[in-house]
View 1: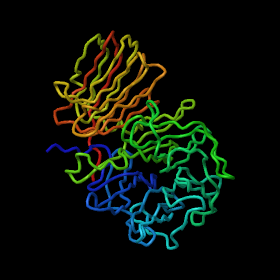
View 2: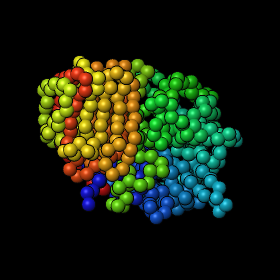
View 3: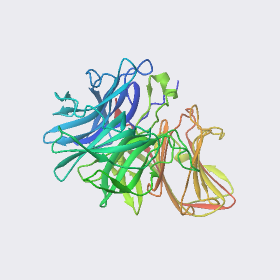
View 4: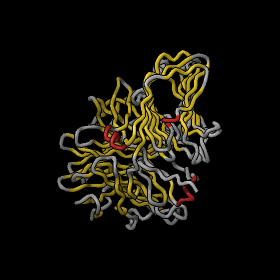
Length: 467
């Protein structure tokens, strides 16, 4: 049986992986914790799993650091964040409890580590033992930061009218918290999960996952959404004064992103390359499911939040092939040198003088199995189509670009995933695919005219994760 185990993406040794948690740099190592249901598919027991790295490229797996064994987290140590405080790493998380009558209780909790590998739960947990009036028990995913000597915590919430939002808490220290107010009066979906708030170029960015958005044209055509607003947070009353909600990724498997500030000041993001309720992927036969994205650096281009692969990922490259120039006119062709199941590809395409141009990614020889990326110059859309991608996953997603006649494309291909970055991350598509072993070809085509690829590069990539 073909294994779909990822090579340079973080995935669990067994069981169910979801949200990245506690992203941090502490005592010389980068830490990625994650939601890890060790009992899946036979039960549910959510721990915090753990990977660490010295460079964000090559990773080592460790034993889980938080286990659901206390009264305030007995049904799961749910998502949260981490921050250094002196010589200690503080992990804030939501303790999930199901009562005997089927009701939910949620507690915001703290665990403390001196080495990043071993955590002790705070003796006075929970820090926040209830939710404020006007909200339900869907109250989780604390993200904590410091500003001007104060501590702040944003939490995803659901109002009593079953609409989603987030709320802000503050404290003079990491142990005592008071409610400030509701972050947003927007009514987007029925629950906001995994909120994050950070600043870029003196602008505040509110990142969150509103569950329950209905599709609108090309928007929101996946199971659950993730996006952001750009604006300003009023730290006095907790209100975020922001612009419209914008989807952060246009693919199918991108959820629960979290960010942290690297030692050199970059805002780095990981996301779950999966979705809630996606529990039927082919890797179940291998006793594991889901993975995380590659780490991405965030930056603003005007009013657009962009994502690009961190520069450190160049250390994965082992063999390069260059395509200096190629013209495609009303035809298609495989570029054999660009084949592979663990590669990075960069293309620069100009003067697209055709109705349609596209890429066949992870294709078999007969083009019966592939994932297709289409640039439609008539509609100015870029379309991702995985209808024929393999054993699992269907559907199309699209995004409109201002200029589709000149475009830069970066693609990270791993054993069972694609991450596509358009124009240095102005738009991205993140998707899981499960093609056959022989579906490793890369092809290009044009319809109704010619296309000029002025530059192309491909690198084979190393394996980078020891579970």
